[in-house]
Image (cartoon, rainbow, N blue to C red):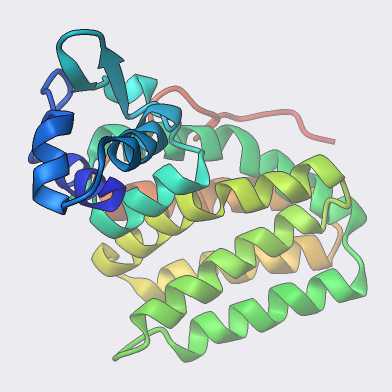
Length: 235
């Protein structure tokens, strides 16, 4: 039932401010008891997607209230959501403020094993760039970015990569589908990898910006207030 309501909300059948069906109606529709309905509604409440209003029912909350980095929420978004430019813009803006610094740190700390992980992901991206390999290309693309997070050898960044993985996948899959020049995108990823391999923190920072600028262009959205295009005095 939780998935049924999540699909209805994330696909846009219910909008922020709308009330979802009442408990008694959900009991009848799914032939389950009220306790089971409340348990499933609790999943959506805990995710920040709906709120319970005593005497009225359950209402969809504003997008800003959703726990969009919660793995359950991002899973629902990946499976059910129509492209939402507002949410995409927020995630991209966050990535633009974070990932260039992650790349900079990786350029200082990456080990040979980290570089192998990046290379394998990059090769997988290249091998599945065209044809029927779209899903695999996106999987390898996400693995490439996760490898960079892990190459910082900071346990917080490494754990954050797992939290962010569904959000990164959501942007990667959509931008890879709409990219006008996938070869150029692949080349930007190669330059990022080579900057980390050469231990060039400044170049890695700028290369990460370039990768994400390409994502913004493919999605056709302005990333908002972020580090994009900022000329920084990096050391």
